Image: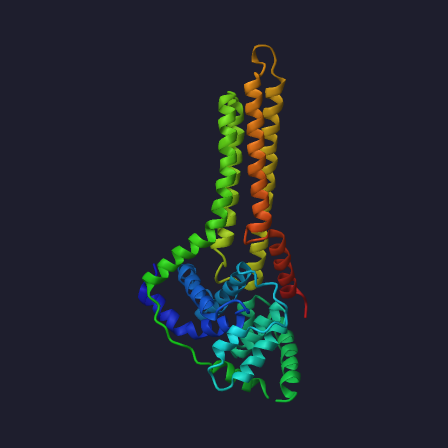
Length: 162
Length: 195
């Protein structure tokens, strides 16, 4: 039986992940704050089923993308063109000093296919290959190959004119 | 620009700290489920109205043996709606990997489609059987013009309701099944393809 204190403790420790993921996955017609709220609801609902087989952070990293995927599907945003810019996500993030770099990250992420987009997020979160494999269900080798490809793409994009 | 620099910028985003109130969360969860489950409830109401009409007709015609088949149909319908409701409201299955989540969604979608197909075949069989048996009765059981008109009205109302249901699913329901299935397949393929 989960308690309010237990949930609050977990949420407070991980809400940074939730906010960053919501900004990352928010489409042009979705407010990141709506996604954060939905992630909070899903975590509250799913927490009793957490059996401690994975680390709590790994579990949290799995909840958020699945929530974002279903949220966007329901909002019919799934067919957005791959190059579409998530303006609202950028607006939300624009408060920080390096807004242009974040804008570029969002733009690049939107050009990636779903699996690479998810892996890019985990790379930005600086997780190990093992953690990424645990979160995505891919093998460590598979993760390694894809991450190398993503790294090369990022290098080619961010070395030009940056 | 190194990857480390990108990671630094990404992780240094300011995150507003918000305390979550459980009461507020419960309230939002209720609203969320009501809102997201509305579609399935409406579809369920229309299908159940069809069943109610069929029941009423069969009772009037004293077709007791058909009640059981209709009951089975109603049960199929309930299970199908339950699956759809869970697909809409209870997703995502938190804590599973994206592949497992997508595969389970695809399985549920297929199962729900099978249920609907069985339901439609069953309902069609019941209606066809009833109409044929009714029309085939002769002698003392021959149909009066009023009864024939009743059958006509029943068939017309059932057809209109079925038409509304199909139209609603194709155009109004927020979940377009074919589109969802295609999208899930594409994403799953992307996740599972070898590097």
